[in-house]
Image 1 (cartoon, rainbow, N blue to C red):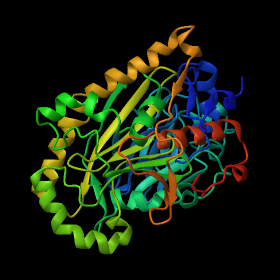
Image 2: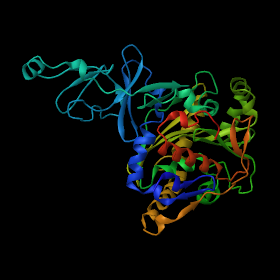
Image 3: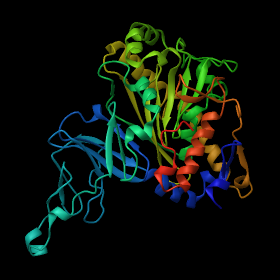
Image 4: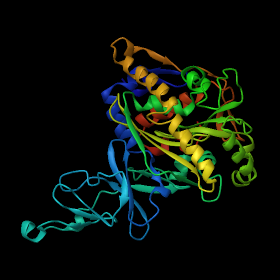
Length: 424
């Protein structure tokens, strides 16, 4: 059965089989993760020559390494000899790394520098130049966010991001110097399909008043359940990217963060332009699996696929580089308490996400379609916002844009047929 028979985004109907079918998962690896621009790290995590951090593109392990000349490079984190994982650490600094299996050594430019017993074992017939670390096809950075793709035919990163660039600016480039990422990463595995998590951060305001009512009512969040609130937006800037925004004067944050936002508002407006007077971006997803949150708790996260029914979440906390130390500490603590493996909001979400996935295992359950029709026919393209938008706080318009893009990627091999840059 073709993907077009499983995803009817125009009518808001999605087959449950796309979350549990092993063949669909394998197809995602080839058609989505091996082709799209994938987030790897933030430049602030590797500031010096020799700094590295490890990441994934789909299920392919990757090492991001700043070479001795200061250039950022990315390679498969796999020794070319037997395929052993070269680097086991999350991050560090090294001029070279040596494989733990047979001792092959690679420099931070990716070249194979040393092979034990090369002369005697290979009798002088081995050419190290032919066996470097396999590099990604393309690597680019946008406002400190490092992305890469294995597809040499993929469009340039700016073109891939399209109108999403302004929304990323509103998350990561509001002040001089941009943002910095706190050291350390939270990692945890949950029993759900990666798309369930990604769609939640695409545009699911619907669940907040119900799934997070306890956390909100007990003071873990400044926001309170307001199911009749019309002061937020669902925004689809194109190419499957999605944003949830608030009204620009929405002050549902901690008092210290509210005061900080008021202090920097004129600077932010000068930097981002008049669009920031229309909307305050709060949560966003860069297709397919990179998400960000800005508020009292600032979070970067990636939904790494680990099989049809398993997702490994990586999460970092970020702050404006020029923010006062007290504001940085407030945001750091809020991030730990709200999002992360022990966060109040995270616990609520994971419980629901795993049930949404696991109930699709049933023979009959798997044949059912999901209803994503909320707001169908009510969205419009807003030139000022550069996106398809639904103004009411609960809508599934972003879900439909996300799955429309997913289905198109799954069936289309030619980038010229993917309407890159079009707000559709």
